[in-house]
Image 1: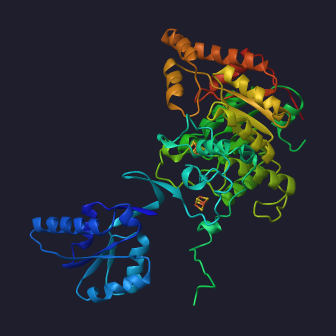
Image 2: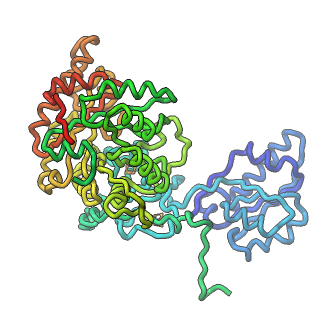
Image 3: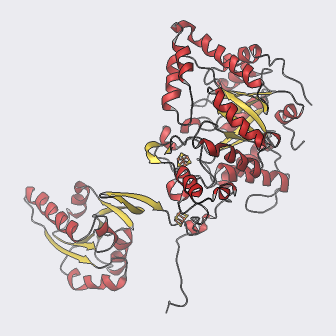
Length: 222
Length: 308
Ligand code: SF4
Ligand code: SF4
C-alpha cells in the first residue's frame, strides 16, 4: 500500500486559516489501512481543527466526507454536490488523491493533510516499512524476492557494501542490511549461485528518469 | 600492460607496491594538499586522494589529483557513486585522464547520514561493481557506458575496495569475485587489525585464484591513541579492531601511544608480507601523513623501485 502520515496540526491550521468553510475529504483505501486519512482520521482532524480555531474565537465550518478512492475520477465526482458550499478542500488521501481533486475543481484550493511516504507493508501493529520504489523494472526475481532498490540505503544492486554489520545496515542498528536478508534467503532456497551474477547498471527511465510515467493499456483504453 | 600507471608497473614487476592516501582540504588552500604530497614523495608509488570522505565536502579529488600530479606524484583518483550520476562520473574520468591521471579507485562511498550534508540527495545511479564495468568498457572498448565511441579513450588502471571484516563474512570472497568478474585490476582493503581474520579471508581468495586475477594491497592505518582504537572498534561500521589491540594501545602511557600505534602498524605489515597473495600495502595515515615515510622505512619497503 501507499503509506502516509498526518501532517502536524500547526501546518494544517495555517493552510485553512483564510477560509470559513472547509470540505475535509478522506479516502477509504491505503490511508485508511495505515490509519492516516480514513473516515476515523477525518473525524479526529475535523474536531482538532474546530477546537484550535475555537480557542482563537473563530468558528470554522468543516464538512466531512470519505470517498471510496480519491485516485479515481469516478469517485471524485461524488464531491460535486458539496463543492459549491465550501471555500477550500483539505484532502487526507495520498498525493494522488489531492491532485485528482485539484484537477477536477479548477476554482477551489485544495491542501494536503498528510505526508505521503512510501510503498510499504505493515511489519507489526503501528509499524510500516518501505518495500518498493516502483522502479518499473522489477528485480525481485534476481534477488530472492527482496528489493535492493527500496531497501538498501545505497541502492546497491551487487551488495553488500563494506558497512554491513551483524545483519544491520551501516546507517543504523535499527535498519536491516537488505543484502544480508537477500543472502540468507538465497541460501535457504539453495540459490547461492545467483549471487555471483552481476546485475548490470539499471535503466532508470522506467523509474522516472524518463519523465513522468504512464501506463497505456490498448486493450482497456477507450 | 593495460595502462601507463606507475602502480601497475610496480605491481607487474613483482615488487610489493606501496600506496598511501591524502584527504584534500575543507577549503580552497592548495598548499595543504601540496604539503601532504611533499611528505609522501618518493616514499610511496601512488597516492589516493579521497572523494568527499565520510560524506563531508572537501576539495574535489580530481582537483587535488592535479596538484599532486604537477608536484610529480602519482595520484589515484578516488570516486564515489554517492555524489554523481554516470554522466558526471565519466566526464570527470575524461578530464582526469586528459590531465595525465591514469589510476582510479571505484567506490560506493559512505552514506550521507555520516557527514555534514545528511540532507543531500543520495545519487547511487550505479553501484561499485557496475562502476568497475563502466571504467573497463571506457578503457577496453573505447565506449561510454551509454554505448557511444570515445575519442582517445581513458586508459585507467582500475581499483576498488574490499572489506574482509564486514558481514556476512561468507560473502566477502564472493563479493571480491564479482569485482574481479567486473574487471577490477587492483584492490585496496579496509584497515586490517584482525590479522587472523584477514588471513582466513585470503585463504578463500587464494582458493578461488582471485589473487592471480587482481593485485591485493593490504590496508593498514596506524592508531594515534587508545581513544582512536576504541572509536574505530565501536563506532566505524565494518571495522574489526580486536580487544588485544585496544588493550595494547591503552597499556602504554599517553605520550607513548602514538609510537605504539606506529609499532603495531609496522609489525602488521611485516606479518602481512608473509601472506601469499598480498601484492602490496595501502597505508592510510588519517591526517597523519607525516608518519608514512617512517612506517615505509621501518617496514623495509624503501627504496621504492623505479619503473619506466
Ligand atoms: S525492484 Fe523495483 S519494482 Fe521491484 S520491488 Fe524493487 S523498486 Fe519495486
Ligand atoms: S549495509 Fe547493507 S543495506 Fe546498508 S548500504 Fe550497505 S549493503 Fe545496503
